[in-house]
Length: 597
Image (tube, rainbow, N blue to C red; front, side, top):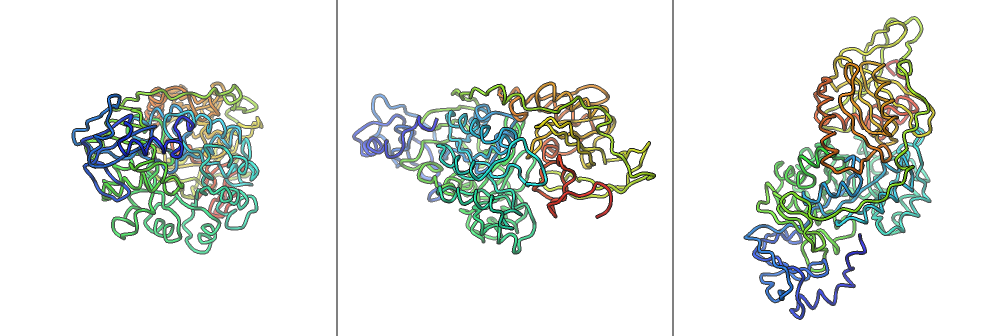
């Protein structure tokens, strides 16, 4: 936990004594090439560690070695700071903080800045506290941003709980709170909504960082108004112009590579070609599911990708270490290999391919050669956190029927169009047939439904979606449905949609895929319907089965499940679905399913 490492002030007498040679270090790493992200250079320097902090760095640390000092000879390998994820949601990994930490530690992630707004929508402030408390139990640094928007767009969705300005003010006193989570209600900020401004004021009065989320292409006066409100960073950019606008207005441009978001390559040219100051750019993941974490990596994957996109390795490393720490006011605590900082360091033999050969956090080896070597303690999640899927009734095929206007043989329907590897959707139109009074999907257009699951109303909102490539009789349902986390069901067969929804009611949440009357895959997520406290590899194996099942249903998209889980995210354009209806996010209003307006 945070209190397992002494503060710099508490450790200062010993750090000074070790650096001066009067006392011996706990650990010395010698014979390596130290990547100094403060000066952006590689130095043939040793490192001495005491009390979980760096005490000395320099050409020769032999004066710090005593009979009880552990010595690691690196054989010329590089020493890089532990990697930091500047913006991410633990729940997107389908894992609790403990199991998420266990999954990413072998990949070199030693610090995460997390926004648990998924659980806030289901369990409110109490759920945030549970995430916060388990985060502080881990052997790495997990800071929590207090969620700002539950609901993300008031009036357009109904959540299990709502977050108030008073909740935000209360949380600012918690030990692990680092700031305010992404302010997704950008129209509220722009229009001077008192609650949004009060949340941001409470954060700034506490001397902490306001996270941003401006998901609009309009960089005119609305963008200027949003920045004036206090958002200090933004991860919603998808093009070079977005990165330019943000840093020119004093924000940090957070460039994300998640399981489904590939927004680094299109923005990093602001540094590699435009020559902007790289210290204003931060790398992050935003959303990574368990399969990505187990099979591909975490922040090491993002850094490698940035390098592959033409970024100099030392600059890419700065974007995942010191830049991130500085942004959150922690540059004197972590993010670099320098005296006094927490001794979070990675040994690697290559700065471009970045193999993570040994990970040290707070002066202790926590992973070697891809294997974790420490325990990640679990929080005792209570029963009511595991019983959150309340549908109110057993659903039937009829609940998913979409009645056509009387006498119509066909209708013009608004369709949510999925865009591969991006969060925004398209607002499409499709001419769809009517059979026995019900509108039917056709070709690559099929039904989507949002099933209310917080208040047991039994309500189902129906619409249409395209872009997944589904064929035959199939259905997929998920209680991970950003951000209000009701239940999203997509399918070509209404009877299977009912079966899939009812199945999640039985198991307490998760993801299920059905084809031709049979269940092909099930990922149980019993905690808030969002997470499992099973090991990451186990959850990833089930997630892999889910991905294979989606492919068996004809899906061709990269990381289609992540796209599925965002179909109810009513703060990212253009068209989404909520428990209140179809949402036009370009206008922030409920819109009719039929018609061209």
